[in-house]
Length: 382
Image 1 (cartoon, one colour):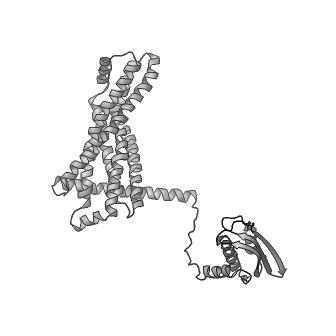
Image 2 (cartoon, helix red, strand yellow):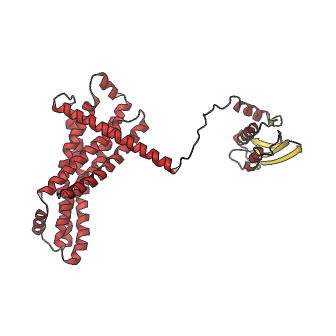
Image 3 (cartoon, rainbow, N blue to C red):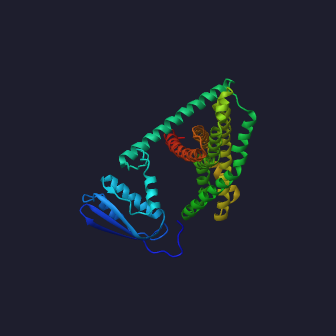
């Protein structure tokens, strides 16, 4: 019913005119947008030990009403049914009585109502561990399929569009130069600024060049490039493959006799794995350039001194060690992005979730592999 211009507050009064009988008097305007009295105590009484055997209504003072009244009546009826109490609705308005009968005409199907059960901490940890193991198993299986696809490529049996390969080279390489340049240059500036601030106190400002060069070549260039590619290219791969799966394009490829792993995943993997070392080498140069700019601005050293110190600090083993890490990171980003895209569900929401998981998984794998490789390099004295 439409809300009137002026309303009176809803009221409720309960009486017990006889043994086992509860009379509920309703007054005022019971409107969903209006002020309604608290009914929790009444409903608790109806479900308690001293619940009445019969419930009646008096609505002579009832004004306007809408869904707000029906919500209360439905709660009273459910409480009465739970205690097998008789519910006399003759005192209700005709409209309210008919709506109440209609609402309970069909019994609620068992299990239809959504229930929430709070798991214990141990159960939640177990479920999270199981999910992590399942994801790791799926990732290893996908890595095995990708390895088989590379084997078919070496034997000349992998079928994919060479034009797509060139497009992915451009997407994973040239289009990423801008963000890689900016991040790498600023990382070099930050390293040089922090190093100069500390080393200048001991008269060792010249060794800022060593700090920036070794840090960029061995670790930071590869890691930062990998994280950038995980958030940029890995997410793009997941979104592209997920959309293809939603549109049933992967199924169409299988119908045509083409392996989606060869036709869709392989060219993306080739492009990213090849471009990662090149981007890392470019990031090395930009990081050293950023350190050079900061050092020249803050320290009393020359351009030639900085370059000589840099060349003396960086060895070929450091350079190749960083490039090998970039290969590993590129492979992990490819596997994470493509695996999540190929495992995507069949909805638009699933594409977004797959893209998010691809980024998170890619960055997580990069951090874990960086830790493992650092320990291995330290043990092997690389």
